[in-house]
Structures are given as structure tokens and as C-alpha cells.
Image 1 (cartoon, rainbow, N blue to C red):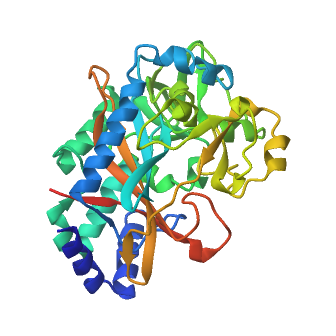
Image 2 (image 1 turned 180 degrees about the vertical axis):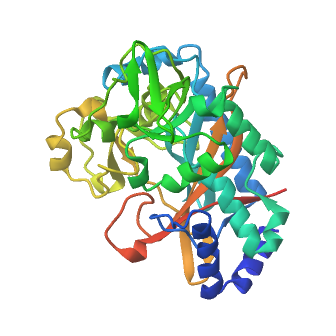
Length: 396
């Protein structure tokens, strides 16, 4: 079945149609994303879907352990700690590289994030693909039989928690300058909450306020947090009227602590067929002689920053804070997507939501990154290495 859809798509594709597809995206806000939008979706077979679901459930099993907070307290000690942490994360993104092992397709966990990804953009990207390739309506990007409007309702529920929309904000550092700002625009349009820069918040006692378009001060009751602390730490030019460490009378839709708890920090704890050999650099007793088979990664960076793909012994020796890095075995990405001009590698990010009163996270949707490069998510300064972001489509 998947082969049928691949052949249908490739037969119908033209560069003109691709431009019309991009123009359709740009037409919503008179803006085109700064990241590259891939020409094609990734068609996910039932076999691969089953593997992805099984791998996600094994990650979730670790996160649901009674001792998970004890296991990850060190991650907060190494970073920022924000008060009033909730019982569990709301957002969960689980990244699998689609790899080859013993001649078979095998997804391998690359990263886990307790942080929101492009939930709103991915929903709309699916709609755009259907606009230009109507037969794609036979497929879905959603897990568990979820319908599109149900998906948006779930997002609204966890982001707003029944608060009036004006009292819920999407918070970011200069959101208009972020590569992911199209997701913010869709969130504002589809959910109805304002987009606010960290510098625009006003603190009065334990409460936070922002000014609306009329200049009125509006109380913030809940924050949909998109702020990454390593970016905030670098922005010493910003003047904030509050500190994330303050005792604030506010709810978090995505408490900042979960960004650190659910991160590369947990990769060394995960064992099994879907997981890559990963060691905290401070636990490495002897530097491997075959370093060409390893990647050096900072624990808490975002979007692939700081990763050393061609790692050398002196790179490891130069790291001062070794508890902030991992040494990870390389995987053999499989060129699995038959694009119009050759085979392409893929990485699937499963987007999950964990509602407040649910016993476990729910798998909702997905995001796919495609590349011809050595490693997805790490730029090698070669335009040919990049294909871009897209969505995975599954059989209904």
C-alpha cells in the first residue's frame, strides 16, 4: 500500500506544484518558514508504525517509573530549576532515526524532549499536502484514530486548561525572530492565545501581566512555554522584569523543568533494540579507539547545536564539564525515502500529549525531517545535505 502512495505522489509531483504548495503555506500569514520545507511527505508502513509505537512505549515506561524524578534531579542541579513543577510533563517529543540493522529497517532513538514541538504547524502542513494531492486524504498523520478537529481540541485543552484565551500566552524570546515562528502564528490563529516576548511581561508581586493591543494590562494565568534556557542565557542584552526562578502565581503548559528532565540526559538509562549505546562523558573510563563510530553531544542544547559528528580524542579531552555531554554510537541511517531525484534519509519525531489526569501520554501526530547528509539535524554547510521538514503519513 505504501509503495502505491509513493508511486502516486512521485508521478504527480512537479516543481511547479511544489512551488504552489509552498505558496499555499506562505499565503496564510504572508510568510514562508525560514527552514526548508520538504517536497514530499514520508509514507510510513504499518510495520514501521508498529515499531515506532513500541519504541515510544518503552521510552514512556521509563518516564512513568515512580523514581523518575529522583533519577533526573541531577539534570536540574546542572541547569535552571523552576518552582511549582507539575507531576509529569505535558509535552513529549520522541525522535527516531530510521536506520538499517542486520539488513532490516530499525528505528533508533536519537533524542527525547519534554518540550513542545511544532504541534500547530504539523496539523496545518497536513492540510496543505491534501490541498495539492487530494489522494493523501486516504492517509493520516495522527495516531490512535484521532480526527483533525479532535487533535486541535486536545491541543487547546492542554494549552489553555479552561482559562480564558486572553489569560493564556505563548511565551518566547523575540518570537518574531525565531525559525519556528510559523508554528506560533498557527497557534495564535487556531487556539486563539497571544504571542508574547519575555521582555514584555510585567511582574507585580507574584503575578505576571502583559499589555494587549489597547494598552490594557492583562493577567497571565497560564504560560505555553517555548523559551529555551540556553538561548536565554546567551541573550545578556535582554532586560526581563521577572526571573523564571521567582515564585510566581502562574500555571505552566510545559513546565520548564521537564525540558531538562526529559532530554538526552535519560538516553544512557534506556536499553533495548530501539536504543543506541550512549554514555555520559563523565562515566567514560577510556576513550574509544574507534572514535569514528561515535558522536559527541551536549546534553541540553537544542536544534543540533554543539554536536561534534567527526569527534577526535582532543575534542573529548577539551570538554571541561564532562557531566554535560554524552558519547553516543553512530547509527546507520537508511536512505528509505524514494524522492524524485534519489534516496533520502528520515527521522521521525512522534508528538505526544500527557493530559493532567491521564495515567499515560497519548501519541498524537508526527514530524519528519529528511536529509541527504551524514546526520540529520546537524548542518554540514552543504546545501545538498538538506532536504527539509515534512510530515509522516500512515494508513487509516
